[in-house]
Amino acid sequence: MIREKKALALVPARGGSKRLPGKNTRPLNGAPLITFTIKAALRSRYVDHVMVSTDSPQIAEVARSNGAEVPFLRPERLSTDYASSVDVAIHALAELEARQMHFDYLILLQPTSPLRTGSHIDAAFDLLVKKEADAIVSVTELNALTEWSGPLDADLQAPWLASIEQEMRGQQTSVRFRVNGAIYLIRTESLIEKRTFFLAEKIYGLPMEKSVSIDIDTRLDFDIAEFLMERNYQEGSDEIR
Image (cartoon, rainbow, N blue to C red; front, side):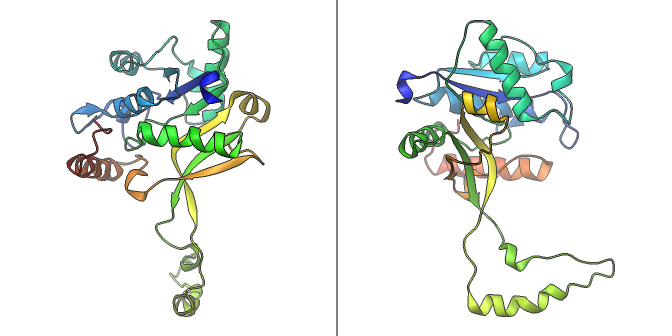
């Protein structure tokens, strides 16, 4: 049972961001972006500790003021564009082990998915138990069918377009999903052994609605998230505040 184990929610939030500078503390509907992920984790029935891994004292201050733990600052080597989420997660687990804090599960929650709620986090844990899984990754339906896509050459020619009409008429395409970046839940033993969130077996996808699957990378993404958050709140969801 999950309740007999220890679960860590880890929020990776480095200070540098080239496409959208300062995005992790950028105000979204009146609050720093990272706070929505922290609040979602704190609302989960299964999460025991909410920790932020960051190299930024400013982000650390915002995180602590919103209820997250920041027991250390991330080293510079793990704060570059080339540092992986896996390396950041394993580093955090090692630091916590050194402080006599052991966790059976780790759920990585990127702050760039502010519409993910505590209910989504709980759904991931529930699915893990139901399927006796080692990992759960959140997914959402593709906005466009891959069968209706292809390359453009230097002269903008696209011979693959000739098959689109037949594809549309036949309606033989199947629903496809993509990783939405909101939830990566895994047994810590599996993460440390395999050094990936994408295991070869005992891994399941948690479907999430497109309306909550925004992953902020650009200013346009930020604007869309702001609109969706306000709309969801007006429709009665108080989990996003």
